[in-house]
Image (cartoon, rainbow, N blue to C red; front, side, top):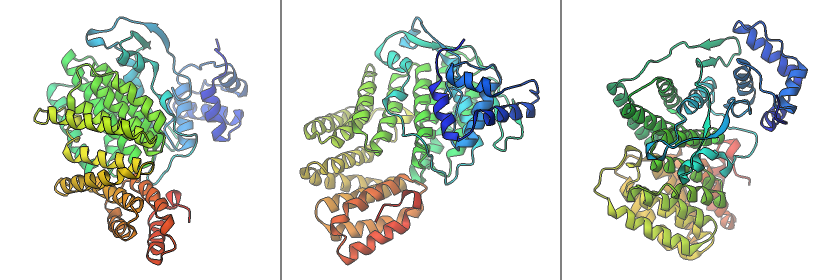
Length: 488
């Protein structure tokens, strides 16, 4: 029985430009290609899905996800279409406060990565609705982080299915991995570190699909039973790879895809009972919103991340503080910025010699200074007094990164430094720094650098009447791809 209009399906259907009859024919054609000739979808059924919220029987939801994915050029899952069968119930928390929902999480993980792998996304920028904000975090994560006992319960997923992007046939269970042993899990843990190092050096574009492929395989492993400790390690591997897939997607401009991976990562951390890992994943979503200037929403997410404080190591607290300070800086809250960064420095020193989880090892001294630099650069647009500490932290961060092989971070630092120099009224220094950044921009595959260039370009406007600055602005416009190019 229906439950009212399916607004998710209706919104995506409107984006496609199809008629209801066209969608029905596409579903039937896909079904016939996989041997489901009995499907007889028609206009009236499509209308009931949209207007009454009826959920069709399998395999129609997967077929719908495939045709929408191909049409819109981005991953569209069954859940995105509002067709996931689930119900809300209460449950008794497992030891450590986690309410298990592994089957549903593994299903989302394998479905989403499988759809993502189908797409040839090189050079593609997502179009469509604006990036969702705080509402992207499901109620189950809010409840778990706050200690409540509410969970989503779903049936164990059936066989995984992938549909080819050419719409010719469905590939079902080409390779279904069995349970993993300790050696395989250790190899996956090591491969995450290799991919993380590559991303830090060169940006996410070149290795994104390889990371998603690894994550898809981990999802397959998680559909099998494992001893508790091995299962916990596998869920943490899934969380780590999902964060990395999200960050790489964000780095190349696939913003809604990135946001979904961050949420999947937090859910995987939930299955491992690791609240700090979930908090770090949520902080990535906040950083993504901050990249787009949405400070108030990012601040709300960081307050959620803070609720995972029990048992959190000091360095993790330091990292979360820097992200929250960035959110406060976008709002011009100088006192809060000072408090949060002061606490971050104190937290960082507390366990500077302690071993860190693999996902926190990248938050080292150079990253601390780099975040403080970015926070003060953001605040400087509201308060000129922030210019001096921004320059101080820039020098510290760039000095440390020069020996760490972090080309992308170094490039972002250069662009940010030029922005501070424009704000400080130092056009000659800003022009020199920006010229250095332009010479290096081809060394990474990060589109975030283009976004930062656009922001820096905006700050140079008051000097646009000077010939050297006008020439620099022309070089920036030429360097940035048309889809990201600043207006003259």
